[in-house]
Structure formats: structure tokens, C-alpha cells
Amino acid sequence: MEKRRLSDSVADDIMTLIAIEKRFLPGEKLPNENELSQELGISRTTLREAVRILATNGVLEIRRGKGTFVRDEVIIDGQGGLETLAQVRANARDLYEMRLIFEPEAAYLAAVRASDEEIRRILALGEKIETEIQDKSDRTGAERAFHKAIAKATHNEFMNRLMPVIYQAVDKGVRLSEEKEKAVSDTVTDHKLIMEFLEKRNPEGARNAMRIHILHAISELGIG
Image 1 (spheres, rainbow, N blue to C red):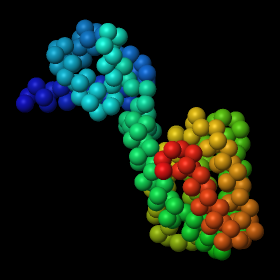
Image 2 (image 1 turned 90 degrees about the vertical axis):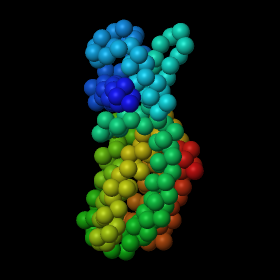
Image 3 (image 1 turned 120 degrees about the vertical axis):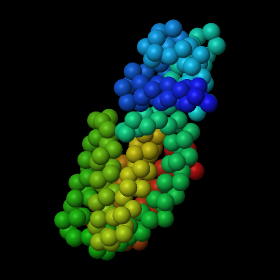
């Protein structure tokens, strides 16, 4: 039992090297057993057990005759957590279902209730997202701000309380879309449509445009 607890602790140490210290990135090979066990001050047997734990959890991949690698599919989030691409997709599916329930209605209410200044801010943020996409820079912050501005414009306190969930969905969506050109181009087109209906104060149009936007994302990101 003591040995099991030690191997769990070593697994956590290796996770720290990967997720926090960024010593080993997705796809990279870990040092050989002798080097890593000496660095961590443990036996090779304990190291093997820790590696087996991480391999079982989808973090590491043991390639016979080649060594141990951080899995290519592992994604490191902003808080130093680890997820496989499959986990991101599964989580994103549930989060996007929540978006589909709430965000079209948020767009409807924003078209009805937003002040002129709030509409201007939404439009400015939509343009910022397009610019960041063209520049191939990280648009996560602008995406968060865009959807928050729409929720805020509903003037519904509880809609705003849903933003942490929306942020999670946005973050995962941006992450999954990085190598999907059509998903990125759809984002620009869909945002323009949402912005157009909001600017025209057309609630039904805004609701439908937001629904189409989220359905496009679900389809293009392969999370349906």
C-alpha cells in the first residue's frame, strides 16, 4: 500500500513536469529510466509504476523499443491541467449543448434590451475577433468578451451567472478549431450575421443566427 501511494506521488511529480514546468511537451520523449529515476530520487521500479499510471490515464505513451512519450493528444489548459483531445471533445459536447439552450435566447434578449453603447461594444469585439483570426493570434480573450457582452446586454442577472460555463465552452471551441480552417471561417461569417441582426434590433434574427453559429461549431469541431 505504501508503495502504491509513492507511485501515485511520483505520477503527480511527472504531471507537474509536464503541465506546470512545461519540461516535456505533447509528443516529446521523457528521459530514460536511469536519468529520470535519479532526478526524482526514486527507484526504477517505482518510476515504472508511476509511468504505468499515467499511461493508463492517457497522459503518457510507452513505445516498445523507443521509450516513453507524452501523448500527442494531450492538451495543457491555462491552469496547468491535462486533458486528452478525446476528453476535450466530450466535455465540449456537453458545454455546447448548454450554449445551445441559453445563448440563442441571450441574443434575442440582447437585441431587445441592449443600449446603443452595448451594441457598439458587441460590434467592436466581433471586429476584434476577425482581426485576431486574420493575424493568427490567440482570440480566446476576445471570444470570451464578445459572448459576455451579449449576455450582459440581456440585463438578466442570472444569464450573466452562466458565463463561467460559456467561457469553458469558448475556450475548448477555440482550442479544437485551431487546425480546422472551415470552423474558423464559419466563426467570422456567423459572428457577422449575429452582429448584423443585433445592430438592426431584430431579435428573431439574432436568436436564429446564434443558434446557427453554435450548430456550425458542433458540426465542424466534431463534437455532435
